[in-house]
Image 1 (cartoon, rainbow, N blue to C red):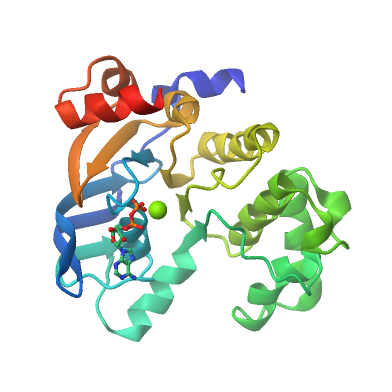
Image 2 (image 1 turned 45 degrees about the horizontal axis):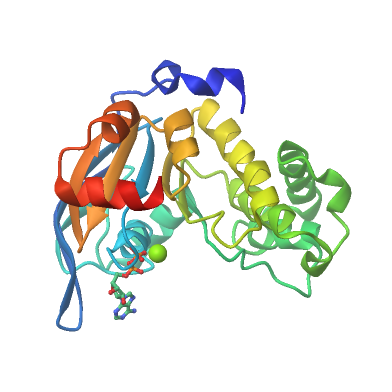
Length: 257
Ligand code: ADP
Ligand code: MG
């Protein structure tokens, strides 16, 4: 890991609020999946969300870019409140990039085509410019030589880096990651985490659902623990790992560390 990543406090966090969630609740049918969520993310913050399977982590971050709808309370992303108004949703989606466990690349398109598809068709960027931007981000994730290949010709780690580059091509101000390394073989995890560490060092506002606690310790300025739809505990990484307060957090940490 890069040396500068070891002191997360040194990376800049501004006073500006990137995401504000207030008294938010969500149900799937009668199942109360998110319970009274309150959370403020300042610009430049890097937050790791962890917790047992089924605790609502994916649902929470999917609510932030409106892949899921909440029922009560408020979610404000970059100053825009998420309501059922479609215009707002488009604005928010354009500011928020998302990377999933499964890379969701289009198998029949080349890597370059995967990266330029949305810029060309959604943003109406001229093809040549979209390709230049795509190559810039492919260099950034260190696989420019793969541009003409198809996803199936790349390793899992390379495909996930393409997925990150694809998000970056839309110039997001906030990046959401949902277990981006949990489908990868161990030897590929590091290359994806290194890419994420670099993004963090450049000041990207990041919310990462991950159980990579080394990553949390290296770059997070806050770790949030969720259980049964609630935020049970949150703290800066050192305190979170060395001095967990709740029994549920202690039990979870004893199972994963
Ligand atoms: P996590 O990401 O922490 O594993 P999820 O947010 O995926 O948790 O899921 C939280 C709970 O909501 C789980 O009990 C899951 O079964 C349930 N759930 C997730 N998606 C849906 C859905 N579309 N409809 C109904 N229940 C769902
Ligand atoms: Mg999940």
